[in-house]
Structures are given as C-alpha cells and as structure tokens.
Amino acid sequence: MSVPEVNRELCIGCGVCASLCPDVFEIDSEGKAVVREGTDCESAGCCQDAADSCPVGAITL
Ligand code: F3S
Image (tube, rainbow, N blue to C red; front, side, top):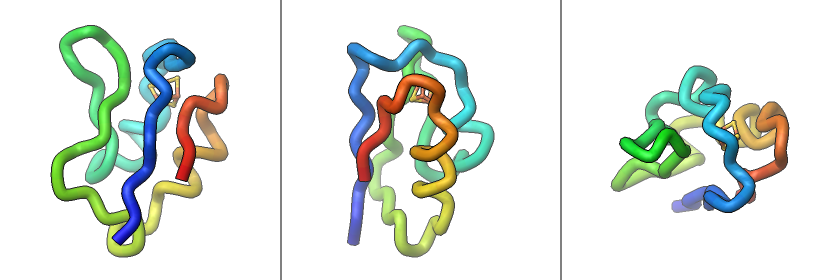
C-alpha cells in the first residue's frame, strides 16, 4: 500500500491534485491539500498523474 505525501510548505492550494485524484487528495480548511485517510495509490491509480501535474512539485510518492 503506498501513500503519497504533500509538502504543505510548498502547496499553494491550486487544487489540481484533488480534481485529478479526488479519492486520494482533498483540500482542507486551510486551503491546502491533504491525503485522505486510508489512501492506497495502487488502487486509486491517479497519484502519479496528480504528482506530475502539481505546479509546485509538492507531491511525492
Ligand atoms: Fe497543492 Fe499541488 Fe495539490 S499545489 S493543491 S499539492 S496540485
């Protein structure tokens, strides 16, 4: 089971990760991305896309 990490210092809250991969990422009340509880990138299948699309490279897998 693989879980991505969001560097919240880098995240600018653009929301691309949450729109490409809503089962894994969501935007919290601070307007930054968080990884959902129980996330599994293998079954979600969209973590790489989200990481590649983040404009500030805040997502690591
Ligand atoms: Fe933040 Fe990047 Fe997602 S800026 S909201 S981690 S696409």
